[in-house]
Image (cartoon, rainbow, N blue to C red; front, side, top):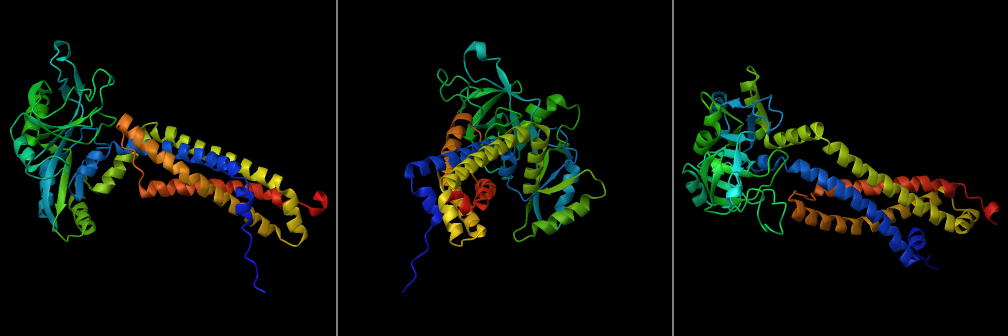
Length: 406
């Protein structure tokens, strides 16, 4: 006679009461949402400070070793940057200028009470001909127009005006749109076109200007001599087919003697920037603690579910022991239940988390993005959380004695 299929005991224990099982899954899902949202906000705050770096259209960057973050002024000599042009595999190298501290953008409203209302803005100076920034929506015509001194591209995702009821669609700089005239660093400037980058810890938004405008409007008033002698980033583009690792090694050898130029890939610079904000602000501790709290809460919930289930089925577990099933088998049943709970809670939990990401991105402007790596980390934490709870609950099964129950 054919053998009957094995009974999925773990599934039957949990799913025989559908309402109760749904409550179990929602408890685990709550922990998933708590971990996912805290982790997402933490990464969004770190990502907001690296959007500019990720928009650079280059393979390797040269910076001052003392520049711990783009927020600081330490620059690298343009003369030293130019020396990279002789390295095999280097197609071009372009200076990029970034100013956080001295420039401000005046509110665009015509109301005289707002005409002196200014806020600090990040100014990015580039050669319009160099094609060094990836700004969707900015056309070649816009870049050509940027060559005219006193023109700028503006960030449509600048920090929103706090009173959207009376100022719908406005930023803290007022209404930003093509053709609007305002003041940058106290001098008249005309807005040409918009792009999307977003604000960060240092500023409420960004404008992009030509290197000529950057020199006259931003640098010249504050530098006694050679205002453009240093750049913030030397952006290196490679020849097609060139090996980035080999070119990076050659550049490091080239600049090793002076010790005044740090050679990094773009990804290296992103990691360096995130590391600075992680170590020097409460972001890591505050939101890392939130993720840990979600993990602990989920572990407690899962343990209570499994311990309760074991207690409810003690006679059944005792019967299985009495007819010869080992502790190992019964422990595996409990661990299977923990994995089922992990799956049942993770799916709705991540759906809610994804929706929360979209909502928070819309409300705050922070870039909450669920990457495959972040998805995998939350999944891993959920599985570990539930399995750890299962291992704790296994002890109750091992202590079951058929003689005590019957």
